[in-house]
Length: 384
Ligand SMILES: Cc1cc2nc3c(=O)[nH]c(=O)nc-3n(C[C@H](O)[C@H](O)[C@H](O)COP(=O)(O)O)c2cc1C
Image (cartoon, rainbow, N blue to C red; front, side):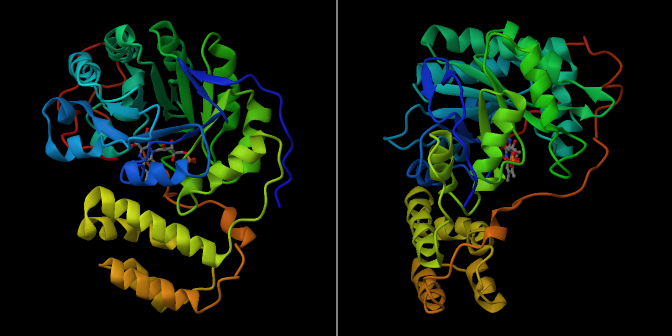
């Protein structure tokens, strides 16, 4: 059982919304669709952000993107993350959100480290261009504000150790009217490797005075979340990989922030029921074929730490239909439903990778005040 103590804190407000507990599901491309958000919401409260949506794809009404912005009727507030590199396209996308009532909260993604994005000046490369960054945030805020839609901004520490951008990004976002900022405490060069530097969250909290600062990076248990808040003074936490195959983490986070004891994770039988529920929700969203195919990537995470043999695991990874899934769940169930959640399974999960030099456009670092829009950095499909 985690040793979790109640902590003193002021309630987290994201514009008009109270996030209690002060917990945000991190936007994760390919993961935080309506099905996964619903599953997570069934365990706790807070804010649950959709996977990133590319502004250009949205304004061009790309059918796949329009499907990605599906929200459950019970979802409130509807939280949409936008990725963009051009103030005009950002404004057009937010105008569409406002006019068509597509979301209640907008988060902006300036943390993507993928080479295909940074090479063109997008994602985590962009905040280095302070003026352009400010223009994009301003475009979103000015368009969303009259409709009462709050805008938050998520970014990394910087491009690499020599090019830190987060303190400027925080101050600029605050000045342009963002209602909160979230820091993934890694540089783009780190990708998902090594350890997040939580001391940067403390420094951002010292630099940003009027809006909440959310900390992000390496929260793999409720105790980690409480520790981050206590260590850094951040106003809330953003949880990504820790909830992969473990949506009940949001229940544990709720308990921890309420000062209640956090019990052991579910046993194998209970995990199988969660997996089955996830399958149903994905099938509702994508239909039977794509729904079950999409579930495959979650299998290893759900089974992590349980004594399920490699051949069964492999079959889970290749499952095609709900009937096949049910057969596999039955086969695993025969192993014993009482198998306990392994304490070791609480550790890091999901992407880790290794650090790499960040690909940037030529001369990108020459002039931080150049506000010209990088060419070709608008991804046409959402993802990352
Ligand atoms: C599979 C995956 C997809 C991600 N997609 C996005 C995204 O669409 N937008 C975004 O801002 N961050 C994205 N991230 C980064 C997470 O939001 C988060 O900042 C990062 O994983 C660090 O938090 P964690 O240590 O709790 O996982 C993604 C991360 C992963 C692992």
